[in-house]
Length: 188
Image: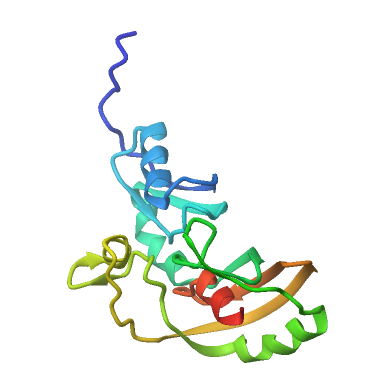
């Protein structure tokens, strides 16, 4: 065996990929294409590198259906650490502020209706959205902050799964384009 890959091939289908922690969504797509030696691949949405879970990947003719999956509602389970604000609104960012947490389950649940239904959400600076052709995360890494317009998203279900100390677990069913870390930051 020479180690050379054979010529790419036409292969059609949708693969349900369990994205591990630390992998980008694009790396997941490229890995699937490489594993199947596929000519064509497409994505159905993306997860942050810190997120794990189901990420459908389309190959060949199935890429024609990827838009339907991109437009579909999504569901997430997330764990938030209350009382800490970071530069990226997630665990990877530098800590900006730490405050004591003194909240109970009833208080958290009383806040949830404010974040349910059709809401306006400002996308985070650390996102792949582009400003003048440049991804916002690149601008953020360079120390720049640009104004982001609020976007309409729909939170069809927001449910507390648990609250232990400063750790809050939520289940979120939402429309495409919803940033879970922005939702958690706003809730915090």
